[in-house]
Structure formats: structure tokens, C-alpha cells
Length: 258
Image (cartoon, rainbow, N blue to C red; front, top):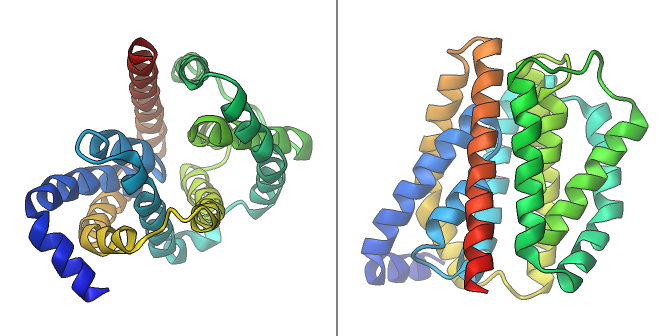
């Protein structure tokens, strides 16, 4: 593995420098908010590398990021909600994969992005749930995440909106989002393994990008500890809107190319 890393770094040093910078910036966002790393990093890296070479490595980095953060947030995770979310996610994921094989992806991405934009706009205007939803609504949110993730690889927004619209403290919402994504990323890695997508290059890129990830997460987490709850929630919503705009632009580009 070390030989593979040295070979990759030597033959691709210019790509390594650019990609590490992208990973570092996306990791800052991940450390601060608990989400956004995959979409930001994959969108940036797909400009210089094929998605097939990027996605498995990003999943490995996502798992590393979550494991690195879990010890400091363990006591703040809403495990009850996580259980119901994962139940809905696992049940609905195959339906999302089925939709991916039957329906064009760009229109579905556009619909998702527009939904996120509308919802985050309402939350920025002051909309909040009065209490944390029960088992049925929580499972339905997990199901929405499973469908969206299976259909076009963006399952985060329903869960992020779920946690940050509830009365839970910002630290609890952030910790629960991180724990949920750790679970779904592990499931994703299992799927990648069985599809033969995880290669020696995946691990070489993982080791090459890991320092940028860890430093970026530290910077982002340090920033989280310095902001108050209201400022953090607003920053998360603005970030979510920005990610939705990126998804919308990507869907429009794919639509015009198709």
C-alpha cells in the first residue's frame, strides 16, 4: 500500500496538490456543520478526475471523518431518532435504486434541489417544528433519504432539514447528523466493495488525502465551538441552500449535455 501511495503521489503530484486543497476546504465544512463534504468534494474533484475514481475514496474519507469526530460527540447523539431514520433508509433505498434505473436523473435532482431551497428559505424566515417528530415521521424522513440517495446519491438534505428544524440543541443536531451519515456511508462502502469499485487506487488516494481531511475537520470543529447556536443554525441553512444550488446547476448542466 505504501508503494501504491508513493507511486500515485509521484506520478500525479499536480493532481494531488489540487485535490488535497479541495478536500481540505470541504473538510472544514464537514467539521463545522457535520455534512456537505461529499457533495462539495465530488463536485470539485469531478472536474479533474472521473467519478468512478472519486466516489469510493470519498466514502472512505467520510467514514474516517465520522470516526474521528464520534468520540467528541457521542453523548450528544439522538440515538432514538437515528434508529427510526435508519429503518426508513434501509427499507426505501432499493426503491431509490430502482428509480435510478427507470427515470432520468437530472429532473429528479432538480426537484430535490428546489425542494431543499424552498424548505431552507422557510426555515431562514423562522419556521421551526414545535417538537421532535415521532417514530412515523422520523421513519418517513429516513425513507426519503434512502430514496434520494439511491436515486441520485444525495440523501443528506431530508435528514439535515429534519434535525435542524426540531427544538433540539445545535450540538445534538450536528452530532446526530454525523452519526447517521457514518451508518449510511458504511452501508455504501459495502455496496462499493461488492461492485468491485474499491481498488488499490482508492486506498492510495485515501491515504494521500487523509492529512488534508483531518486538518480541515479540526479547523471546522474549532470554528463550531466558537459560534453560538443561532448563528450556527443560520450558517447550516445557508450552506444547505448553497449545496442545493450546486446540485441544481449540476442537474441543469447534465440536462443540457444529454
